[in-house]
Length: 306
Ligand SMILES: [Ca+2]
Ligand SMILES: [Ca+2]
Image (cartoon, rainbow, N blue to C red):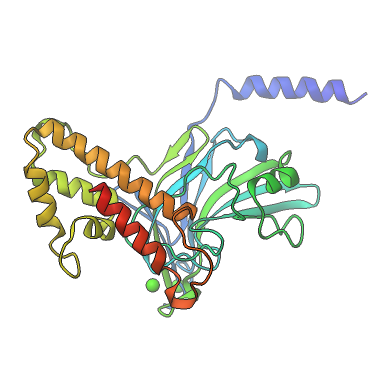
């Protein structure tokens, strides 16, 4: 007897919501700051202040209803200090289960350890929905399921209502200086994009000088990736000069703008390969050597891109 009533209520609610569809919002919390449109997430467990022990941003009014209604979840991250570690950075998807609200964690960085994120390079997560990596942690819902694929998570929590989506950094404790910093841009949740697109994109290709082209490219790629791609001396300190002379050889400003676009995209694919673990070595690497084979491959890929 109750069903028809519930259905009627549901229809009224749906009608009420659609015309008043709210703009999607990102709300930073903890020690988070926003500068030039980029979200900076800090976890500093080494100073006296408790407010910056963790940071994050929550994303609301994205149109997401159930867990299964999430079709796109991605971000670009630049771990400026020191690395990905201890399950941070991660997305947190809060779901309403029959036994209360629980978090599903979606870890960022290269699977399976989610450490070895290059510093000062923009890494693209790619769409995490559908990921076959064990980056979904559903252990709050069912014990022992810390290492789940998207398919596993979907089977477990697919029909549950999502009550919150956030991106969190809180592993300062994992580092010698007790501080972790991750820059975030282009967070995409279904049809909504937050903190992007960014990067000092010049107003038009018409006036793009070689210097402007290189500045733009450096912002797009991240400082370290830029140094790796263009630098030829031991620490890549000559990267800017090398970039400018490369760009100066391109005669028209329009062609130069196109080159910036193309190289930026290629560098992003290099970083994406690294994050998704596709460019990774097999087994063996341990301890402080962990990032090295990946770093070599990233270097090769970036040099080819430039
Ligand atoms: Ca602190
Ligand atoms: Ca640090």
